[in-house]
Amino acid sequence: MHNRYLLLVLILLTFFIGDGVGQKQQLNVFTWAGYVSDDIREGFEKEFGVTVLVDTYASNEDLLTKLLAGATGYDIIMPSDYMVSILIKQNLLEALNRDNIPNFQNISPLFLGKYFDTENQYSIPYTFGTAGIAYDSAVVSPAPDSWAVLWDAQYKNQFSMLDDQRETIGAALKFLGYSLNTTDLEEIKAAKEKLIAQKPLVKQYKSEAEELLIAGDVVMAHCWSGDAFRATETRPTIQYVIPKEGSSQFIDAVCIPKSAPHKALAEQFINYLLRPEVNAKITAFTKYGTCVPTAKEFLPEHLREHKFIYPPKEVLESLEWLRDPGDFTRHYDRAWEEIKAK
Image 1 (cartoon, rainbow, N blue to C red):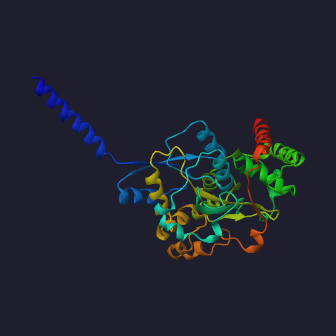
Image 2: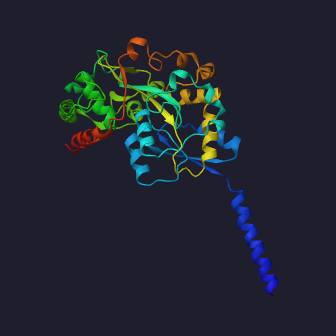
Image 3: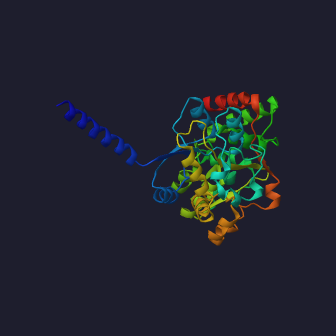
């Protein structure tokens, strides 16, 4: 009898252990909405025999808050440039093993060695883009060329602003002729007051402007370039402009959190994203610029030469990188809290 029980236990153990081995490994991605297409996700799942789960956040600050609160299940995150530098300082990122990412060589040097991770020890560029104004040219006339249009009372309740403190405070700072990265308290105060005065005109603070534009819920949106170009595909009258006062440019990166449960799989995923034909799918889906020059060969012409995906030199000169203001961040935080509380 004893031997029979022992045999039963061994059979059950074999069953459960075998069941665990047979389960697919899971890659958990935490990113912006509309950033990882089903095509890319399913392609990786099929090739590597894994499952990819995608969770989303609305701002870099949301991502930081979640990681600081102890979120540990994510293998891949996609912070913007200035947030990469903050996450490095907070010791929240895992150093990348370049040996596992041979496709790193496909990245244009133009997008490497930037201020936020000078040796790309912790980050790989995913996309680059700008912030500006999307507008429905069938309704908004004349075509806007300045941030001033977002303070025009005739468009009350017909436009949205990004639900992003650095970008939205930044738009007001640019409108006032200041730097996006100011550490002058008077300039922050002036931008805050400008946004409080604007607030009765704003229909909604929303980072995913694409759906508002497509539905016609707004005729203008302060938004990121990719949202505008995706909206144009459904609603061709949607146009995009970078205001003459200047705006922000960004690189969104791919990083591995320190707490990632599947680091080797995450590096495989990064290497997969850097294949030219896969990287082209990122631009085709997100409508942000590719950082892999050979990916352009796999893109239709209108996305290879798009004047706002790849802005001309004179526009580029008016753009700033958002940078980590260090301890001064608390003043941006406080200003944003006061704006949202009004």
